[in-house]
Amino acid sequence: MLRKSAAVIVVAAVVVLASGDVALAVDPLGSATCDRADRACTVWAGTLGQPAAPRAESRSRPATSSSADSVSCPTLGTSALPCLDTADGWSGADGCRYEAATDFVPSAAVAAEEATPGVKGGWYRQACGANFDVVWLPNTATAAAVPSPAAVAQLAVKKLVLPTPQVAMSPGVGVPQLVGVPVWLWLPAGVWGPVSATAAVPGVSVTATASPREVAWDFGDGGVVSCGGPGTVYRPGVDDPAGGSPDCGVVFARSSVGEADGRFPVTVTVRWQVGWAGAGQQGVVAGLTSRAVSSVVVGESQALAVPASGGAR
Image (tube, rainbow, N blue to C red; front, side, top):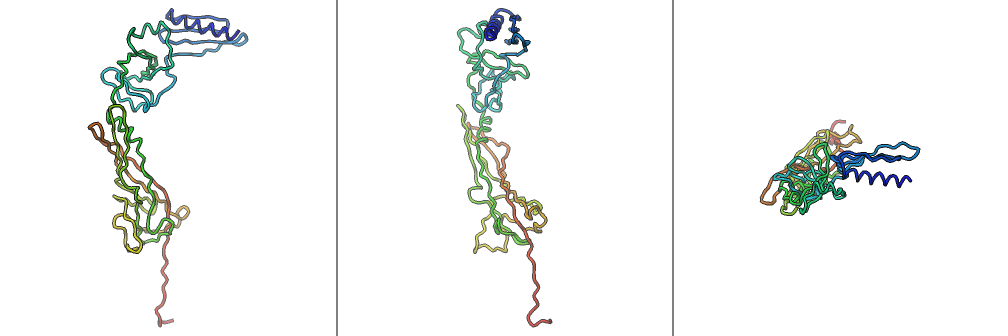
């Protein structure tokens, strides 16, 4: 009996939507109120011993949102807003956002009122601030528009994969460093160099390139060193261990005694400059960083005074 009554309610709601502005369909187990202006029905359903509870069913609020990277960029009017930056479909020149309503099935009355006979089109969810609706648009209003190179550049930047820095120094990371002794710092081969990625949509292809510009070695209370390059690799037997690095090194002024675990933290941060080029244009975007973390022990050498041979005892 409940199933049959529910079916009556739904049928009544559809009939009322097609025939009047506001109407009420009554059933012993529930009722339905439909507002044609909003294309919505409020349905109540209950059992013989249970009062009906309201439940709103509306076509006006979007059920899902689409990923901006997976939709085309239609244009509405003559000045469509960039659409690749929104996760809720695409933006139109009217300030509203749109999304294909593939699961919406209009009534015959709604289709006859909004759709243009003989013109191909489709139904779209429309969000204008806090107002939602489903509207019919002709295909000519949703033809794929070519996004700007700057918008595609953002997609290319997201594809960039920066190498993770590796901490390299002499004496080595696992060897206790000494106060006052020069330490060479450098990044291994393959970490310092340009990195590129390309993004393409129909009509536009853009390549983003990240280039390393600076590396900062942060030893916490042990000091901070900034280098304009990857540093020079120390060559045992060739370079003087008592001499400092020609371009990137540090000399610790105090030991790490008293620090957490008796060690100085080491944070290596590479700062990258990012530019893009494509479709006859070029530009720059906000820089990126890559980072690695380690730690070192720094101790102090103790001098031992030994009397000269033959000296007084």
